[in-house]
Length: 146
Image 1 (cartoon, helix red, strand yellow):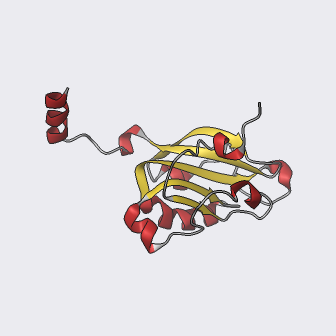
Image 2: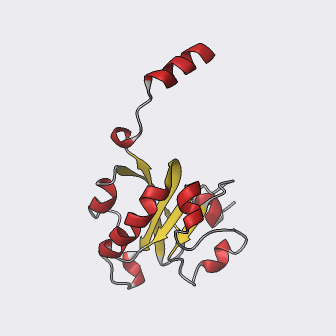
Image 3: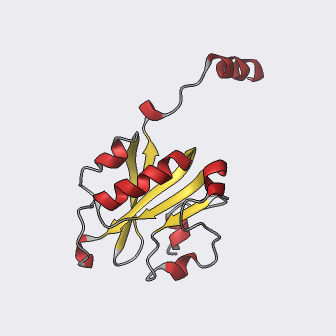
């Protein structure tokens, strides 16, 4: 049985979903999903549970990340979609590019999936160094509760 696109992206019951730059060629795959197409004041206050960002080059991606990353939940799912080299879309993004703008923000690549014949998405997770440290009071509560 083949996975549908939402299963590939591990999209389950996230409430605050952002899909920015969605190409019309795969828009129908997301038709049953309620999502924002850009950062809204509501997303800034509620924080994003799931983000899928489409970008064709590192410069465009850097501009988008400045708005998106501060609004992403600490454990939010974060994907970046970029054109495949076979797509004939001119891009400087690919599986083995530096991804400096993402890495410098404290993320590391986790997995990659094909969205269609044009787009690939790479999931990024916060690196261990970028994850918030557990405070002493949280440890105490966990020890008492456990």
